[in-house]
Image (cartoon, rainbow, N blue to C red):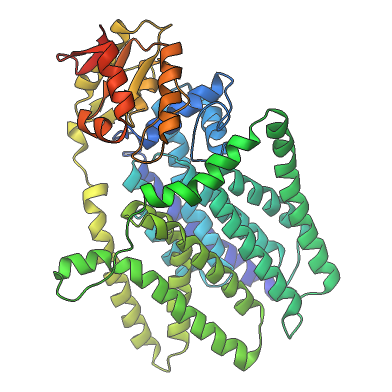
Length: 510
């Protein structure tokens, strides 16, 4: 017992050093960048949707959204704590940015040493929230909640079982479902498989009683997190619209209107083009290689705890990758990376352990790998080394961030506020909800956006009826031809009732 204490103390010190280094890097990168830039579409949708929630409206029932409701409530909590502004949202984004590397380190640490765990965590400092201006969108909130649940369940079901941690893991699984239901489903499937492996593995990894307690606590935590809200939304009449917007719409419409083709490496294409699309194919290749190694190990030695944990992470990675299949752009590619960081770090350790080389040769190979990673991360230089000196503060009540042409934006917002009194609505088309938020003026419709093909002709007619019941004082259209093409009824309604104000670039009543 006494002999184990120095080892445990040394492990704790190693972890504290690595975690402190990660925190220092997070603060060094994030503190000077998290308030720069602005996203008029997705960030505006989160900000204005949160404003509607704070007014007592319910997501999906009272306004249309493609995201589960919890992300709006977490943002509302930030507004309550720090004030209703974009700066408050970015504080949440900074918190997520700082949490993810620590969580990735903790998950990897269940299977590898501190150096490999640190190597798994470092890429998330660059390939993630800095690319999206530290905006805490639902997808990033969901990733952080999912990572918490993975870490807790790995610690709950291992050589030593900890049922109480499984209870918290169940609650975080519910949180993941309420933030991003697809991510929550992938997480639940991964946990079910991991639990089944622990039950049916040839070696019998854990007793039935201990396994039952852990799994039961996880189910209880998930039920406790979901059932009260399920009942509340049912009583409030939100379920039909939630099912339509969060389940039916993605399966029947989003896959057609917002899909981007999966990029493939093609012969004859320039090297730069193939290099830019290579990550889409490299990630599944990594999964296949790990799966082959895992299959070989299980056939040779049976399924032990190391193999069971690796299978958990491999399943989670493969399912998470599905997020980038429908809309294959770099933004969605970034969201699937965290589990693969863990797989890559573990894989590198397994590769070195399997070599019969001298330690010096392995060290040299690791240095080369680190140099390659550094060169790869150099690609992020345009994001991390932007010239922020040209960005001025948006000195609006709901601003608090810096962006290019801040003075022009403030003049534009104040011009709208002059033409639209506080008790009047405005209409921002097709997808500029940030102006609702910054101008502090309401949207007269249930839709915070228009998108080609997302709304049916019947829904566009209802859209017009809602606008007629609450006539907007100002209509903004960016740009005109797009709305004219995919929403002609709405465009004709605007032209029939409003005249262009060319100086301010919007429409006012005739």
